[in-house]
Image 1: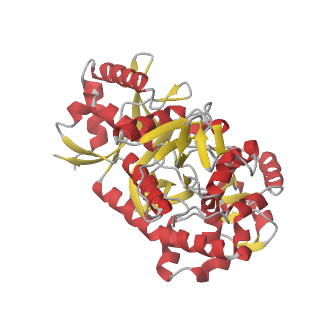
Image 2: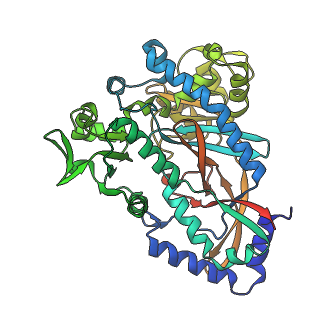
Length: 451
C-alpha cells in the first residue's frame, strides 16, 4: 500500500491554498461546534490518525486478551479484603464498594491508554475505568475532518473508515440502566454530571446533543445543584434516573461528603449511576502493579500471563519491600528505584490529567530522590519507561505549513469490560501525552486502505 501519511502531506504541500483553506475550515468548524478544551481548540493539526486494518485488528485482539486478567483481579479484590489492599484504596472508597450499583459491570464504559511502539509492540500504561473522556471530541472531529478540503482530496486515493465511540458509550449507559431498572421499562432521564467550570464542559454539550438526537431526555447537571427529596434525585424540577458520571468520585466526596445527594440516591437504588463507585478498584494505577507483581502470577492462565508480560510494562506500588525487577532478579524496590531513574516513571495511584507524574529521565538525580521520598508518603506506583512512538503531523503556524514530529498514544474504548469500540488518539510535543496536562491535541482516528 502507498504511504497514506506521505500522500496526505504531499497534497497539503503541492496545492497552493489547500493547507490554508483546510486550516480555516478546521478552525471555523471547531468554533461553530464549540470544540474547545477550556479556551484551546481540541484539534490543532490538519491530519487525522491513520490505522491500517492490521493495526486495528492487533489492537482489538490485544484488548480481548488483557480484559479477562483485569476482570480476575477485580473479582478477587471485590471478594477478598486482604487481596484488595494491594490496590491501596482509601477507607471511604472501601466503604463505597458495598453499594450495589444494580448492574453487573463496575465500569460499563472505560478506556485504555496505550502506545503503539511498533506494528508488533503495543504497551498499555493505564486503564481509565472511572471517567473515560474524549469520545465526544473524537467523534465530532471525525465529522469535521470529512469537511476539510484536503481530506476530500485524500479520499480520491484512499478509503477511510471512521471509528465512532459515542454509540458504545450510549450502549453502556442504556444496557446498565436496563439491568438496574429490572422489569420496568420507563425511558431514562440522563444527567451528564460534573462541575460546570471544568474545561471538558464542551464535550458534555456534544453528548447532550447526541442523546437528544437519539430521542433520550438529558440535562447537564452540576453536583451542587442536586437534591435528594421524596426518594428522587432532582436537579430543580428535573427527575434524574440515569447518571452519566463524568465527575470524579474523589472530588464528589471531597466537596460533598459521603452524604451527598448523589451518594444517598445511588445507595438507595433511586438512581442508576454509570460508572459505579466500584470502578475505583481498577482505576487505581496499582491495578497494573497487581497484574505484573510476581506475588499474583498464580491468578492468571499461561496465556494471560504471556499477554501481561508482553503488553503491560513492569509496575510496582512504591514501598519498602523486596520484589523482582523487569528481568526477574530480586531487588530492594526503593534502592533500585533511586538508582534507575532514566528508565522509570512515578505516578500517583489516583489522579488524572498527568498530575503528579514524574518522568525520571527528565529530572536530575536530586530531583528524582526528592520525588521518590515524597512518593513514599502517599500511594504511588513506579512503572518502567515506555518508548514513545512519534509521527509527523502538519499544522499552520503564522500562515506557513509546518510538519512536526509529535508523540502519540492509542486509547481504545471498552464497553462492559468485554469488547473494544472506537479509539482516541492524542498527540503532543511533550513526553507527557495528555491534553488535560495543558498541551497537545486530540485528533480523530480512521482506518485507511488504498483504493
